[in-house]
Length: 319
Image (cartoon, rainbow, N blue to C red; front, side):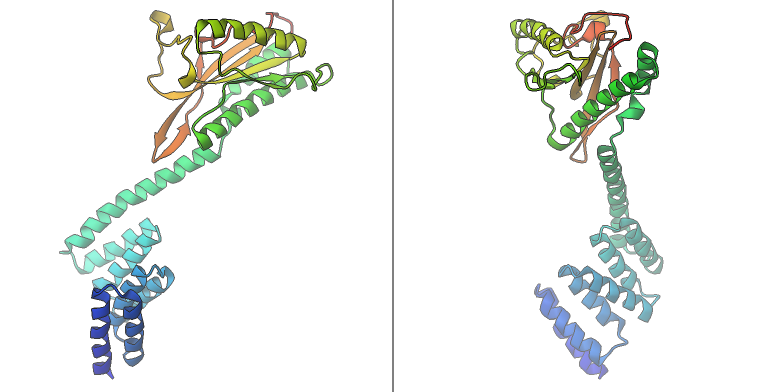
C-alpha cells in the first residue's frame, strides 16, 4: 500500500507543478487513504489547499503533518504559510521560528520571518489607525473649552448645551473628513428653540464661496451677522476646509501671523458666541492609505479668524 501511495504522490506532484491544484489535492487525498501515516502527503495536500485558498483545510493538514513528524521543519513551514494567508502574522512567525530551529540553514524561512515581522507591524498600525478613525471623542479634547464655558455661563444647562453642540459639530466634521476626505464650508447655528422661526431659518448655511476673493469674503460676514440676529441664534460654529481658502490666507503672513502648522491639510472650526470666540485647526494626514484627523490645535482667533465676529460682543452670561 505504501508503494501505491508513493506512486499517487508522484502523480499529485505532477499536477501540482502544472498548476492544477484541485486535481493535485484529489490525488493526494487518494494517496493518504493508501498511506495515512505519511506526513509528506499531508504537507503536499496542505500546499495544494493553500493555493486553492481552502485555508482551514490547509491548516488542518499542516497540523497533521506536525503531529506525524514533529521534528520535520516542513510541517511548521506549511503552517506558517497558511497562517500568513490568514493574516495571523504573529502565529505564523511563531510556527516559522520552530521550522528554523529544525532547519537553521534555511534562508527562505529567515526571509519570510523578517517579512512577516514587518507585515505584523503594519497590520497593528492599521488597526490603531482604524481605532482612531472610528473612536472619535472630541469631548476629551475640548475639556479646556468646557471650563471656559462654565466660567462664562456657569455650570448650568446652557453651558452643557453649548459644549455638546460644539463637540457634535466637530465630531460630525471629523467623521465626514475620514469618510470622504473633505468637509463642506458651512456655518452651523445654535438656534433658539422658542424664538427661532424654523420654517424660515435653517440651522446650516453654506459659505463655500466666501473665500474666493476679498469681495466675497467681505460680503459674507455681514450676511452671517444679520442671519444670526434675525434667527435669534445663540451661537455659531464655522467649519471650513483649509484647501478652499484663497482669501484670507493669514497663515502665509509674517511674525505673529506666521503659520506654525506646516503644510498639513485639514479644516478649521471657529466658535462664535456673544461672550466667547474660539478657533481650532484640525490637521489631517494620510498613513497606510487611511486619512486620519489629528488632535485639534487651538489658534489665536484674533490673528487667524476665518470670519470676523458674528455676534455683538457682550460680557453677559445670558443666552
